[in-house]
Amino acid sequence: MSALNNIKKVLDRHSFRKNLLLSSLVVFLLAAIYLVTSWGVTTASVIQPRQLMLKWADNKKPFTEKSWQFALKKLHSAIEDNPTNAEHYFDLARLYDWNAYQNPIWSDNAIKYRTLAIKYYKKSLVYRPISSVAWSNLAMSKTLNLEFGNDVKIALSNAMAYGPWERGVFHKVLWISLANWKGLPLNLQEQVKARIKETVHAKGWVPKYIQETATQFQWQEELEKVISEKLSH
Image (cartoon, rainbow, N blue to C red; front, top):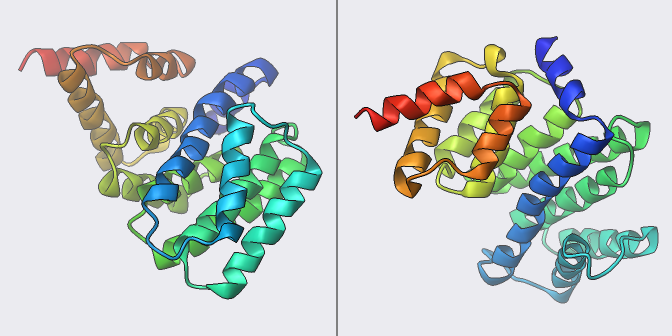
């Protein structure tokens, strides 16, 4: 229950908007990478929804139900044409997450759309189980639905295993981990601490997102210990 209380405390209307910006940027900016590093055949029906999501993220185009439905239709068409393409399911999951973000965080609609996002992140991972982005997005969507369990811990562990060097992935892993720190297995806690140390060592300073996340969850004292351990070696 402490993790749920932490989430609810941080995600008030104002804080949620700030966290939404941080977390959604991770999801949407990665679309640019997928455009040039596709593992499958990229068709117009896939490119158009991706371009829409990028424009929504950059505030170059307003989100509308009509444009969302257009993207939804395109992605379902792409999946019909290629039902084993992990990227198509990943894009569909992101699209459902987008609609969830348009609603109050714990409204029925937000939970409904995030539940669908979770479904398609899982489907994507069936065909590409080494995607750290999909694992971190799955963990975030389940966290925002206030679902804490072994599946979230597995998702966090896999995200760290397959892409700990990806800043966006670790940002989400860190946020979720600190929200539920006492409920994390010791091995996951150690993985998170190790990644913080590596990041600080590589950069020579503590990145802002690490500082801000630690502040949100009153983890500053632990962060100082982790940093001191790194600097002392």
